[in-house]
Picture (cartoon, rainbow, N blue to C red):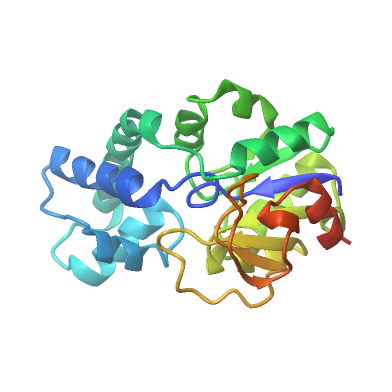
Length: 245
């Protein structure tokens, strides 16, 4: 195994409900909009990958009175910029999920490159990782935002990251939390494990090598929901090597 590729939102950290959602609502208010995404509605909107794309979907389906064309482009750009500022302010209190720091540091110590492949904006990724410099130091590549034309479930972001790393998909493992992400990783040819998150626990994960509650910690094992089971409920490099081809 020559690389680990992590999704970000929901995989590395539970950023959605009390991070991105809150930041969007604050941005809407700042921009004078009466839009508000409650917990349930935001979960539904996560079916659309990418923040700007999510807002366009919302406007098209629920705000027929909203501007269009260049005016809508400008509005979305303003809201998204405000949202990023608000998310950066919330990021310091967003903790990494169980096992993430341990696995990233283990990979780094073993010389296995760690990459992040996400539809999130790079600034949001950096804001969360800034709370833990040791973890940030393990990340060799952040493939994020608009570096590719098509976001997940298209495989573009994973293919881009693999090309930058110089690694074949047969020699890498992806870690995801959602069906959208799983489909993107598998379409790129990657063996993929899923750690379900707050918003994705009810999704179908056909084709995942393993579906777990999280990555587990010694003394606090992950629950195995489907597929391969790591020894003692802890996902480590030894387990991932048994999955990669």
